[in-house]
Amino acid sequence: MEKLSTIWISHVGLHSFRSLDSLIIRECHKLVTIFPSYMGERLQTLQSLTITNCKLVENIFDFSNIPQSCDINETNLDNIILEMLPNLVNIWKDDISEILKYNNLRSIGVDRSPNLKYLFPLSVFIGLEKLEVLKVRKCWAMKEIVAWDKHASVDAINFKFPHLNTLSLLYLYNLRSFYPRTHTLEWPALKELRIVNCSMLEGFTSEITNSRVQPIVLATKKVHKVCF
Image 1 (cartoon, rainbow, N blue to C red):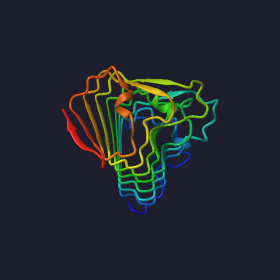
Image 2 (image 1 turned 90 degrees about the horizontal axis):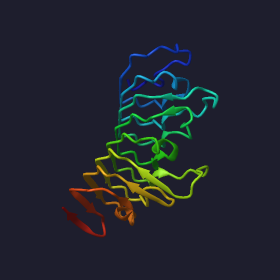
Image 3 (image 1 turned 120 degrees about the vertical axis):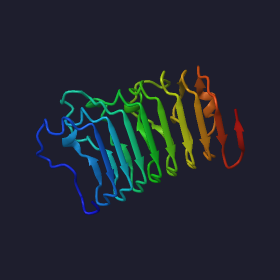
Image 4 (image 1 turned 90 degrees about the vertical axis):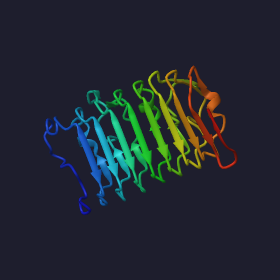
């Protein structure tokens, strides 16, 4: 599949792929965008997405050209795994919260995507109340988990995720904050917190409220320690 440059055709029928619930893409080194704008209304049944070792992929969901007048759709996407995508710039490109909702997402893991500067747009992240597992590893350009939205109507945000139980941030050397503006994190179900070699990250654990975290693994280049 190394010569595959596109997965979908632009004139695909609206009800095509309506039974598709799992998609695995590996070693497709000419793909740049996984889901272009014309696929926005055809992904309601997709539950699991895995993309591994695709050298040119820059965007996963690029629905920026969908007209704002389109109906709002809620996806059934439950699990996302992204690994070894050296050119990945955006998982969600631009603000698509008024077009597609990802409220059913429970697990996301991203590994070895060195050009990814943030994981979520704010508009996507605040709708993920079912999220249970969040893991990010070796994304060396990442500066924040949630990107600041200049159009946000509030100055301070209280992030509430009642089901999140596992948070793992590993080898994110440029990570400075979870969200770059005033915020609090409320995750009462959090049981496992792993922060390893995130030497630029400061004050993160003090932002977490109403959580009982055990075990906790904290390690940076400056201070190496394990707390249980």
